[in-house]
Image (spheres, rainbow, N blue to C red):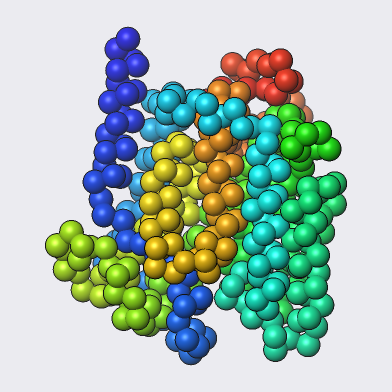
Length: 366
């Protein structure tokens, strides 16, 4: 009883601390600022004491977040969301629909993968858009999607090399979804119902987290921390984004930019960590949904893959059989019998057990 009380106290403290801090609403600045390419990168802003201090604090919070989750909190951490976990068999199908609609909308508007990558000036841009649109329709249909996922995972990076590394990194969320669906594609059963193998699921979830988290980290630097001029212009055009003013806090513009960038960086790192996925998704959903009131359908369609990732994490994180797989990370310290380093253990954890569906439940990592 005492141990459960301590766990509950820690979890309530984490949730309360996160809820008490005003979260700056952020959007993709490049979608709404005219001529976003005219704003130069300024890495000196990252090295300012305030910015650098916030970045280091975010990294520290992520480490503490993971340690507390693994050592002290139950899995799942929010038991009242248990019914959400009933959607586990249908998640790949739902995620594919999110991805397909996003791809189709981007192709129709002349953008590749993300709404800030206009390929109208690229020689074979029409071919890229045609392939993108066809893949979007394919993902929506839900028919034999493993091939579509592999094709997107291969075609996307090659095509994005034309737009540069920042474009490639900013589209990591979609590519992460594609890799996940390559590991865990929906079946031909009703509504794409699938009961994935534990090994495939944890690898797919790792790819999904790295993709979504990597995209958020890229945008934190590309549109805020390393490009403050673009962030300042966004705030000038849309002063409603400064949520601190709504609660009576008057921050200097550059301080707000640093806080907003650090917040986006924090969400990216928390997604990659996989720890406390239910809490992380509920908290991250606040600023992501807040911007919909200001930017409407462009923001909604652009963020569909992120919403799909959040749905995936909270559903798998709410199911007792899959919650432990959400936070799985390769452990290079584990060794095989021959002494070679293992980055992906195929053996079940010490508290693993097989469920009726054949999905193994792994105990907490230590």
